Length: 85
Length: 534
Image (cartoon, rainbow over all chains, first blue to last red; front, side, top):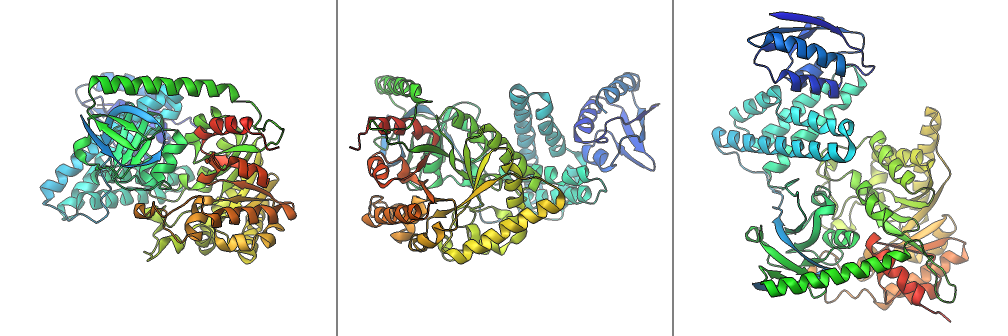
């Protein structure tokens, strides 16, 4: 299992476009990928649930990756977060 | 090869493959077994996901990655597992597939609506849009299946169907029902493509090649090579004629002896802007503002309306644009308006009658128009007015909208106010009305149907419905005279405005402006430039 943290930079928060980009990226992996923010968490492959977290600018999220391709997903998703959110 | 004769409702000639658009199911479908409903849903979901993918690619190529992202988000919503689970649960409980989709869409929308972030709350509309798309597919309404130029065939095209297909791909339209003033006819003339109604249209026509002749009102199915070559030669000749007219694109609309008239275009929304730019129009005499309300499942917000109006007003580059306030009701319906059924909708709760009954709906639109007015030269026009009392109430609503904007600290520009003259009552009251507005626009389509008491959607009345009826021409004359006495300008924005046999009469009457389908501007300008009034 791998885990990283990221602080949302986008002034509009983790809105539809970045969330969409990350969900699409997460769907490419077999690993179970979870995003959590404070008390709440969701599978990163489920767009509505992810948007339902209502993550705002400045909030720090934790992404947990567990599965066969977790190393690749770990690198790739971090890059995607930096690029999109 | 097989030939059919129908009723021509838009001139022109086209050759293409037929795409049949299925009718919208109006009656609710009975639920089949959960298994059956589940597979119907899955098929529709796949189709929606594919369609959204195609839309994404198209938008990316035309508008760029950033503007295309929304379709990618909609695609993810359409295939979202939570959404799918909710649909499956409703189907397991015995719901019919579209009911289940609607219910699941509402549940997801409710989640967004309950969020504390305004941006996120707005996303409820996206979920509903996605659910509505799947429902449309389930109800058999074809959409975005049109990817190449084609002839559109349908029983009858509804306004909400016509906003869903890409206009640049429509070569012509053939329908079973609909008279000259039906929406099919109006849209076909706007696009400058042939349309023929009263044809035996059915699903069997789908995929066949055909020649559609809007001059003779005929359809030739599976033409032989010789017939096809002849039609293509004629189309090429027409194309050449159209090219020749293009030199008039910035020429003045003035007769040989110096009488001028303004030639404006009727448009229905941002989709018509490319057409408008190529049309040679000197302004827009009628923006049918219904377009933003049709083909969707929730009310547009003020900001959505404002952004669209602003886009159109700015595209005009300072030329005049007349925005007609919402004319929904009668033959133009949107389901979410939840209109009670009426025995006689043409005489029913439509246009300003509806707007005055629903002040929030009206104020939202007026605020959006006022905000857009500072970006250009805007006229606000009220449809279906019958007399001064109504006009006073409308002006009050306008003043209220101004107050709302002032309180919010929003700016708006100077604008002109006008009314449509389309009820016989407005003709009789035109003297009084003219004193209180800046302009009139005579809507000859409705005026003719109300003066002659003939339903314009009823094809059986076509032989009776004389567009040149002396009563119609007399009403126009009376309106123009009374308007000019009061210093009010008069335009004509119905189909009659494009009727070249009346152009000379309109010029002699002193009509200030003719507003016609974009494709009609250049031929009409040629006609005007060839006239000598003496």
